[in-house]
Length: 219
Image (cartoon, rainbow, N blue to C red; front, side, top):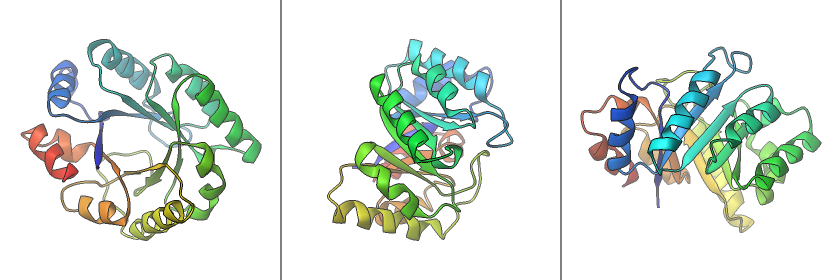
């Protein structure tokens, strides 16, 4: 079953409450929280996302999907654990070595959150394999992280397929999430390749009817 994680990065200021309730009624599966520090990526959304995620937690029962695009992963984990997220995903590229990756995995698990690891487009998919038995989700970035509204990099479809084949061959129970350029034109390709959680922001938030597009993305 395909699930939808709606990125709230580009919500219209002043219409947050209206948008959150509308997305909840449209049956999004998660609210996707794009956390950027201005260092790992150019944009800085850190404080805004803490504030917004905390507000969502107060008014909605929908699960929160935190995507940390930050250099200081430990601080990011600790700051966002306070909102009781369903899952926290950090970037493999932000970790200095294997030991640090496992330290972050354990920190998240010990605080009763699911764990995801994200990889940028230029990162080889094989680099994530050793961690898959210990995490709940792998997030494949299909655009360069840090900016909404980009076009999906078509070469990433093969990366998703390769990951799916490895997961099935090794009988792993793990979600494959994709983030970047997901819309009604691209969703079928990533689903066919093996993704089961789609992150979409611009395509959903620009639609006149959230439920219609979320239903279409899930088909």
